[in-house]
Length: 125
Image (cartoon, rainbow, N blue to C red; front, top):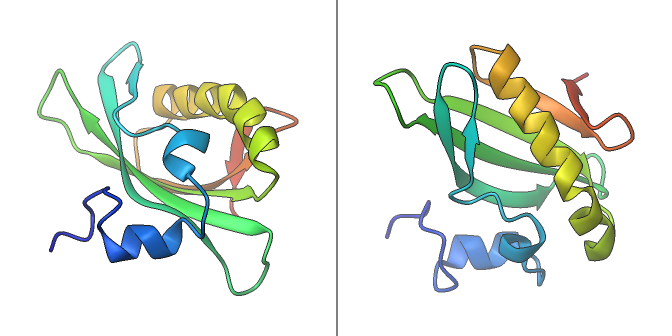
């Protein structure tokens, strides 16, 4: 079985979603981002999981594949504070803006934290 497959039958996916529908809460799968140089398609490597250090901190990995060139893929290890579903949905537009800015201004994979107040991805500390 391909454990990157995003289906409800995938036991890894089922375990990671912890009873929550992250496909609906954070609908990044297949989302396209267009920058001045490239169009990028997002693929979720894994949906949010809890970290052992902080129950309220979640981490997910997103792959961005270039659509117009044979350039390198980029990976974003995205960290964010777990909130109520309605809050995460409300913050999603800001997350999209932050990812767009990261793709526009960065040329490498990264591990970043989403700051919803600033609508930015900031360095992991």
